[in-house]
Amino acid sequence: MADLRARVQKGFSSLTSAQKRLIQEILSHYEDYVFLSVDEAAERLQVHKSSLVRLAQALGYDGYPQFRASLQQIYRQEISPGSKLGHTLTELSDEHIFAQLVATETSYLQESLKTVHNGEIRRAADLILAAHRIFICGRGPQGPLSELFAFRLRRLHLEPVTVTEEGRAILEKLQLLEADDVVFICSFLYIPAEYRMAIEWAREKGAPVILVTDSAAMEMADSVDVLITARRGPATIYHTSIVPLAIVNAIVLTIAKLMGPEALTRLEVLQKLRRRFGFDTSVFPKS
Image 1 (spheres, rainbow, N blue to C red):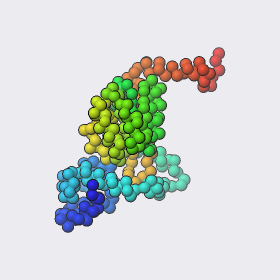
Image 2: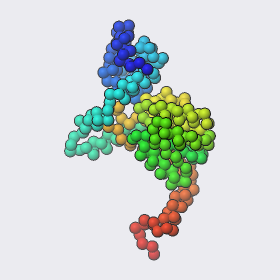
Image 3: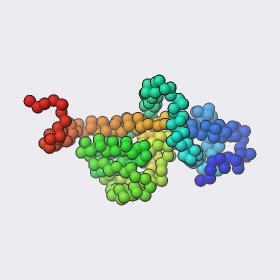
């Protein structure tokens, strides 16, 4: 894929005046558009979405998703973890960091209500509950979230397999995938090559796929069985996992409700084992 800036430099003179203004605005603040769908970007730029589609085509792209992929490429190359943290620190006052963080995280959670729907959470829970094994893919910042998700599913006597490796290393576990399993992927900003391979392999094996991501990966919608989308905040800030954590918790709680009393019965097995082998952590002495 040719660099977007190189395409703009080569074809700028052939763009209309309106397209020139659009591309200049987008490239000046590209970090604000890497997460946005064509409808969201059009609303932000106060133009019709067809204007963005025509701009993308004028630059040699098949459509807006391919254009946005080039924006994401620029973002990955130029926005470092240090710059994200630095930008976040400039927004926080020394005296009220925790209070400001809580307010910011709360706003992200409120925003997620617009895109995360109960039907998607229920569908994900149904697929996980019906599966033999749950292959949970999450790398980098999503690695600890994957481990926590697996921990909670094991408590309910389900069989998670965490796939936190990167590159070809994920194939060591995914080679075991069967049609009665399910693949759960949590990935933001873009879908790395190994997860695209995982989705392709799951399709071939007949295993359903659940994808938790942001609007930057909406083009994957036709490739997965359940797509849950939510932003974690602006692209330039230091992200936390509060929104994906809330999604995972909602799925776990939905699974428990679907299981009914059986969920509590399964949880009690662990407590009985603790008592049996001397690991009862109750603070109350037995009578």
